[in-house]
Image (tube, rainbow, N blue to C red; front, top):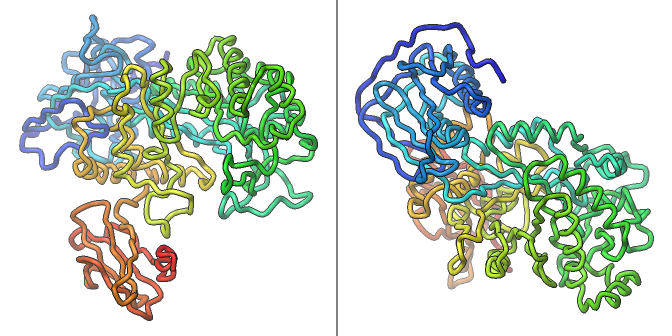
Length: 633
C-alpha cells in the first residue's frame, strides 16, 4: 500500500469567500440531483484529506494526490480522522440503497467538502465530480494566481446503467500501452467504466498467446500505408512488414491494473470467425481455402466487396468452421486470455463474416451434411455455439456482435447490438443480456461534421445525434439491457491524437446517455457544458473535435436551374459568415440568414461561424463542384 502521508504535516487553514456564483455548474455526466447555494469554499494551502486507511481506498486517494499536487502545488496530507479536513471521504457503514454501488453524495459547505458513498468506486466518482467543480486549471500543470474554489453545493448522484463502455480498436492501427492508458484516463473522468479492447482483426493480432507465438511474430505486423484506408495499393513483393506491434501478457496485466485503479473493467475481444486474416496468415491451417499460406496481413488494401449482398471476401479472412484445428486453436487462445482478464465476459466478435469461401469448401459442405445445417448462417451458428462452450469451459461468459443471432443464438450468449437496435430487441425478448451499441448513435469512427471537413468514411454522426442515444428501446424489458457503449474503429484513425478527436465530445454525450437520468437530458444545456469542458481539455492538452460549430451544406436548385445552398447549424445562437470570392470571411462579410444563391462563376464557398465577435468554428472551403455532385448533376 502506498504511503498516504504525502508531504510534511501542517495545520489546516481554511478561508471562505462569499458571493453569488457567476457561472452555472458544468458537470458531465449530469448528476441525478444538484442544489447550488450562494458562496464558495476556498481550498487551504495545505489540503488535509480525511479517509479510512484501507487498501481499496488507494485509487481514490491517488486521484486526489495526483490531480491536486500536480495542478495546485498544494501540500496534501491524508489522515484517518481530521475534524478540520478540507475533503472528507466517508464510506457508509450501512448500505444506502438510493445511491447503490457506484453512486455518491457530495456536499460543499463553509467547513469543506464531504463525499459519502457505499463503495470506493462511488467515492472515486464523487472526486471526479469535485474536480469538475474546480477551475479548469485543475487539468493542467502547476499554475499560480488561481483561486481554488468549490461552489457550495449538494449533489446526489448514481448511474442509470452498470455498463458504460467505450470500444477501442487497436488492430487496424496499433496504439502503445501508454496511449491506451491515456484513453482509459479520459473515459474514467466521465464515469465510463468498461473498456472494450478490440485486439484482433485482419490488420493485426495484438495480444501475446504464448502457445501460439506466430500470432504475434507474424500476425502483428503489416506495411505502413497512409491515405484512404480500404483503397490502398496491394503490397509490393519484398516490402518490409514492420508496422504494428502487440502487447505482451505482462503489458496486458499492467494495463488491467491501471484500469482497475480507475474503476474501469476491461473486456477483451478476439474477432472470429470473420475478420481473422492476421490469424490465418500466422497459421494457414486455420483456413478452409487452399492457398491461404500465400496470404499476408492486410495493410488497408481492398479485402471485401461491400457492393454485393453478403459482402463477399476477396481473400478468405475466415476461420474454418469444419476444421478441428480451429477449435483446438481457439481453446488455447481463450484459455490464455481468460487467465489474464478478470472481467467475466470475453467478446468473440462474430460480425461481418463473409461466407463465399465457405460455400466453396468441401469440408464445410461435409459439415453441413453431417450436422443437418441448411444455410451458411446455420454454419456460423454451429461455430458460435461450439465457441461458447469453449469460453464457458474457461469460466467466462460469451458475448458477440448481433450476427450471432443469425442461424440461432447460443443458450447463454450475451449480445452486443450494433446494426441498429433490432438485434438487441430480439435478443432481449429471447432472454439474453444485451449491450446496446448501434451505429445510429454511437459509432465514433463516423464523420462528425460536413464530409468536406473530415477523413472520409461512409457515414456521418453529429454530436446532437449521439446525445439522443437511449440504450433501452421502447417495448423492451429494461432488466435485459446491461447498458450502452460507443465504438471507435480505427481504419481512418492513425494516431492517438485523432483517436481523441474522434471520441470527444461525442464521448461526453455517451456519458450522459448511460449515466444521467433520461429526464434530465437537454442538448442545449449539454452543449453549454461541453464548451466549458473544451477548456478543460485545452488545459490537459487532449484533442477534441470542434465539429459542432460547423454547419452542414445542403445544395438545391432554383426554378431557373441555378444552384443554391442551405446552411444547417448544429448549435443554435451562432452567426455564420460566408464568401464566394475565394477570400476568407470574417464577421464583416455577408451573414447567413437563409438560402443563398451561388454565383454562376463561383468555384468555392468559404464559411466560418462566430459567437458575437469571436470566431468559434473552423474555416470551411466547400467546392461548388462538390455541391453539384451532391445534387447528382
